[in-house]
Image (cartoon, rainbow, N blue to C red; front, top):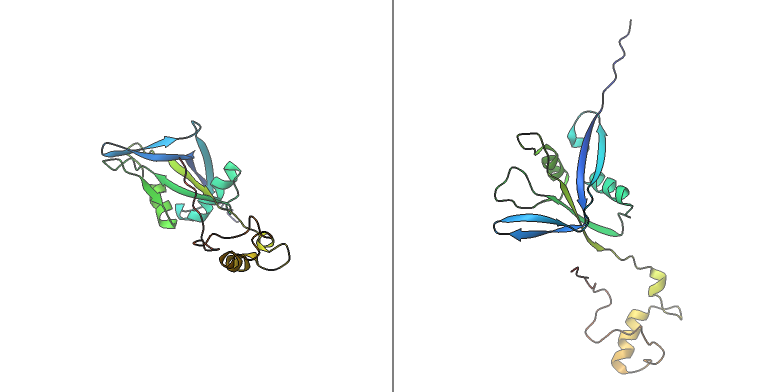
Length: 174
């Protein structure tokens, strides 16, 4: 006679606020959500919370929110219920995820996860960087701008004197 044993998976539920920011209030920090809605994701795991990794957590949040993970930069954080004064704690790797999942108060409650939508990463297609005549416009226009030659033909594609073609401009959020 054989005894068939099945592993009973259990669920780990994570509630999160999407898109907000931290603000200091006296000695404490508080989360200011942009949206009043609370979202949730559930992980069905077989044995250990260590199965929930940083990359899996971010991937599931992006899927829930309908976000392309390759074009968004997200910061994950929370305010631990067991720390005074209240401070934000960021999740940067698998170990931080495990600490977040196992940090509960006396009533076994976990902090709400905060997801900061930092910026949209811009994917620049190489074909757009090529000149209309088929050669790289970046280095040619920089030289032509210095000499004054060719400015009329390349309106809108010239670099200013102090600009570098690979320097990225950061957008700030207000």
